[in-house]
Image (cartoon, rainbow, N blue to C red; front, side):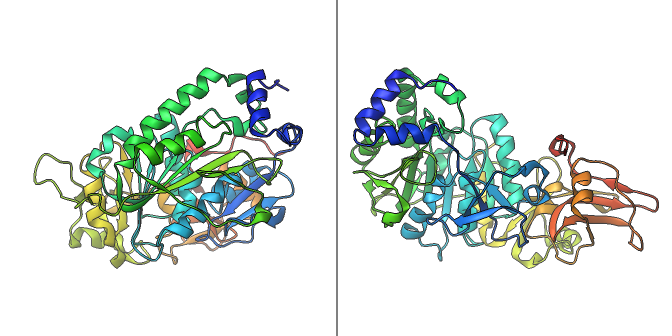
Length: 454
């Protein structure tokens, strides 16, 4: 096991003088395993459930860590494997944001998607979620996880915060889970210990201020900013939170908590310590914008801006039959010539956000038309908007794993030919095309399971 840096040990002795030994014992101990259930995908999950996580509605601890890779339900997006402490953001959102109204939410540092999928579960269909990731490789993972979650009221973008100036005054809710020194990950990621240094802490704290300053401009009047890290030191947590209130003129907000949760309330936020609560190191502070700041009027460019290629009513008819509620969606054609859909109620918001961006995935891709027939996209199979009467092929677990490995499947008896949704316990896994003598497996090659089941 990698040793803890002497400067880190000294820092934690100063932060936790009375129970430092308990803290050190905890971060060298066993890592709690937790998941959060997707409320839109109902299934009997075969997981070793323990008690629920008290500060979130859909989170559960597990008694042991299963092999998630070999669980078809995981690939179907029925749950997300997420660290328990980070789910505490649900309390801030539920207590401070009107979730019955129309919310415009931004997860600024979103990959791999844990907090974005949580926010997506809380928002109604007429609210917009923009999930951003600046690093290209992490952006691809974010796209996979958000499409797997299944909602279409989302924009997934790949931009630096400085590119979002046209969205100043636009968002009611912004999450900044900022890149940090990762001290809260020392228990589950031993490599993080060797990468820690006082210089890195200082660099992270400065970078966080730059991101926060840009992000604060994006807040609408009375908008809520949630700032979080997975670290313990005061430079990245309390000192940055104090800087937010003083420099950015945002007002720190209190969250109602239960003593039994084991969270530590600070002057500017809340800290999870692994020896006090069942979770990893996590810090969160919450701020509210002034009522008198300027609100974004969503002015669409008459020229010079990029516009979404919205399909007319006649063109939309071709794909309406594939949607459960076609009247609720706007359909457009993206730069890959794919047809995509998002909620009709958000048409102006989608057009406005996209007009000044270059790297984005808006809504849910359905697929492309070839010889007047739809060649469906994998994301469409996992979508919550697809027609529920679409032909399905139910697979047992062994066959489902074979499908996810992109192996050849046995031809079912008395099954019509054509596109079918490959399903496991009612959960959609992807596409297969049933032919007379075989099933063509259309599970994406880059997502296939490579692990062998012993």
